Length: 508
Ligand SMILES: Nc1nc2c(c(=O)[nH]1)N[C@H]1C(S)=C(S)[C@@H](COP(=O)(O)O)O[C@H]1N2
Ligand SMILES: [Mo]
Image 1 (cartoon, rainbow, N blue to C red):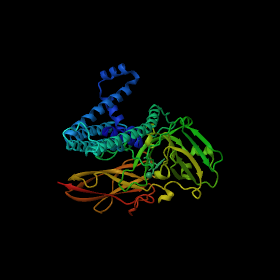
Image 2 (cartoon, helix red, strand yellow):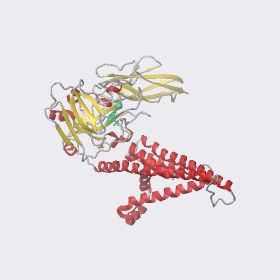
Image 3 (cartoon, rainbow, N blue to C red):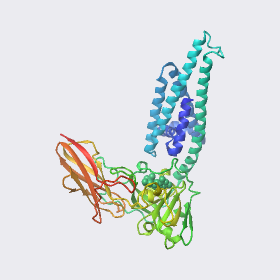
């Protein structure tokens, strides 16, 4: 019961976080990947297309056997059964981490399964022990319960605990299956989807754009490492066959677009770095991806915004909204109604089947995931989700820079110490990056070419350092010659500012 409840709670958590993080699915997938081909062929010939059901059934039997074993062992020796569950919890974590499509937010799920299983097992065994103890105290024949003896209440409490655990397991099982069922179906549709080639492919990445400095992040962020920010407790699951986008409001004519029609448009592919307004100085709520999509200005041109309109309120399936200046969506920048991310359909967490990506604006005013409506309106008439919650109505990304290597607080060996990181000023571009040591004079760093002015740029600088404590700061200047501000500001209401500072302990 304890293990069953833990596994069921894990399925609920997986259903909420992401369909791909279920420990059961991850362990099953790891088994599929690990068994030798001969065994796989044998299983397929034996079970045919029911091979997955057979695998899940086999896993259920294995889990039940493991649970029974833990219970028997725990009854004899306190924490011995708990330890068995802990070992399998570690196996679950390793299985989840080893899945290539899984993000960091998946790791708590198998931990939850193991912890819930361990806590419940200990609790139930204690109740059982209390019953046994009172039965033993009751007389020489504990087999025949005395209805009014001290074992009566202890026995009842044990069965109440077992019954309660069973009820939790059953409820969680049903909820988890419902949540995950829909996600699994759409995940399957997504994995079968073949996106069209871009009519205008992404310009090639300039040679030398990616610098080799130990500890510096990749120039293009892999999907599984891309930061995720949204208000959705459960990842919205949107069937692309049902998806529609409507352009409404102050327009000459409303436009409705389904997914097939969107894919039939001449799509363009561009590298664009998006950032969250909640990104602290030096933080990692920023990522650079190659997005495939249809320019929003072409969609808006079909609808024909009426004079007086100055904002587009985009809305997602879960009711979240962003307010984007109409001007930004109609100028010549590559604001996209995106369907692809780094050569794949958007991951469910990143807005499948379609989202907005706007160069130069923080995500909260532009990057609506699971988008289904663009309402052309006016800032005076409509308010987006985060505006009444203490964030500015407009959210241009502030020019900023980050030191990735060496990390703050690390020590380095005296001699040439390689510093490296990124700098961004989306849609303006970075002109220069400078470093200063212990508040000394600013020295120019080597600046790699950006992929475009809409992406971050990598920089590097080798400093000859003798043993001692150093404080190193970075600052970027955009291509208009405007440096990032030194004044420190918190993330609210419009994005953090100030120099990223790292302390390095140089040892001989
Ligand atoms: N539907 C929806 N879209 C959303 C959000 C949200 O809460 N709901 N958050 C936005 C914010 S604040 C950011 S920073 C970006 C993050 O996009 P990502 O999760 O793909 O990195 O999505 C934006 N799009
Ligand atoms: Mo954000």
